Image 1 (cartoon, one colour):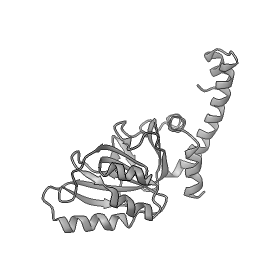
Image 2: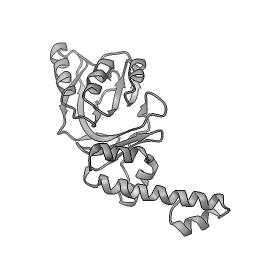
Image 3: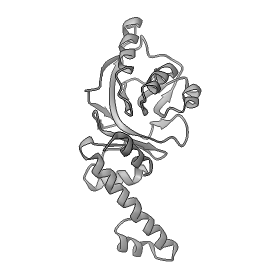
Image 4: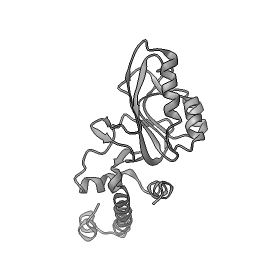
Length: 218
């Protein structure tokens, strides 16, 4: 199934249903930290992950640092979600010009365990971004990119590898391992449909426990 098709199916779901399916499969640590929030309320995002990893590096060479970041921006595949593990709590790792470059490539959005700036311009561009904080302070000369693409991240105890599915909405962000993404989404769709039946039964007068016993979910 194409990334476009699976993203559309994710967009019709909600992260809670996906998280419940992951729990049933014994994958109980797949939700990113709640401090990662959207720049604009109501933002939704879905797509395969493109991991980006860096670390603080105060006093680095400006030109060398920015060249590495610009090369990375040109490497993100269309329909993917940039996922940053920055190790940094002080600077902005994404700004409006970077977003312009990513949008031109058809990138789906970004999830940053770090900072973002140029918020008004990014929101105006309608590019989905979830980040830990915002700040006007640039990361160039204060932070270095150490790898992207074929690197593995650990964000809040959650492993993120290339191709894992990122699904985000108002509730938060879940990470679905690539190998089981289609199966998990299909099961989440079934759960959502069953929850519609539960909802209808309760509205018709069924007790919550009776509805649970009838449909096996709540």
